[in-house]
Amino acid sequence: MKKLIGFIVIVFGLVFIYAPIIILAVYSFLDTPNIGAAGNFTLDNYITLFTTEELSQMIWGTVILALVSAVISTFLGTIGAIGTYYSRRRTQAFVNTVNQVPVVNADVVTGFSICILLVILFGMSKETFFPLVVGHVTMCTPFVYLSVLPKLKQMDQSIYEAALDLGASPAHALMSVVIPQLAGGIISGFMLAVTLSLDDYFIATYTKPATFDTISTYVVNATRGSHTEIKTALWALSTVIFVLVVLIVIGMNLFSDNKEGKEKMQKA
Image: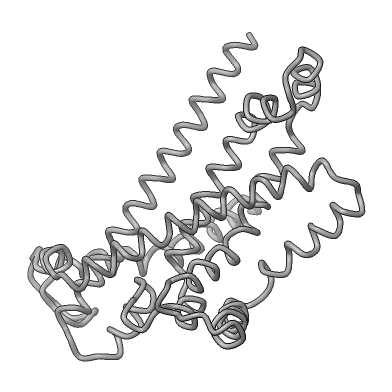
């Protein structure tokens, strides 16, 4: 009975999460402007998505912003995790506590605070994209830190010490021994940073230039308007993003399984 109840709960949870996405994906291939109404199969929504210059600029701008923010966040989060791990306990406790603040803090507070600090107090123009990048880096870096830190704790410290004993400099030992051991956490942190940047709305709203839109801000503005073609094209965009995320997750899991299999074979 407990197994049956657990199975029902899991199925209900999966249906609750994925049913709306599947319905949206189905209607992205129909010619109806309203979800719930009958329609005929069509690829017009995808054609509009990939041929409308406004949508293309918005998508590419969002992707570039996400990649730039993720690269900076991954570097800062990785270096921060390594530095904290090899620090004293009090320093570790302090940095871990401070790192939790942006994670727990509401995005609207972070975005508004950065807007006040950089734009109002320092007089920096939002048209430079600098406040927007700073906001996304501030949001993503703590999550990269939390992804890398567990890998440091799992790492065999004797390998790093052995590299130093064999004559390697601390920098060479870091790049040749420590970083490869953290690869899984670094990649996970990078992907998480990309996802967070793509999904952000509040920070982008307060810090973005007036003529620039991310996917989130564009979707919110478009759903308030009356352009039916744009709305249905955004259904297609949502489906494309979901499919890409699924493929990336499957690829990462396959890579992880292959890596674990090779390590077991080497140990055997």
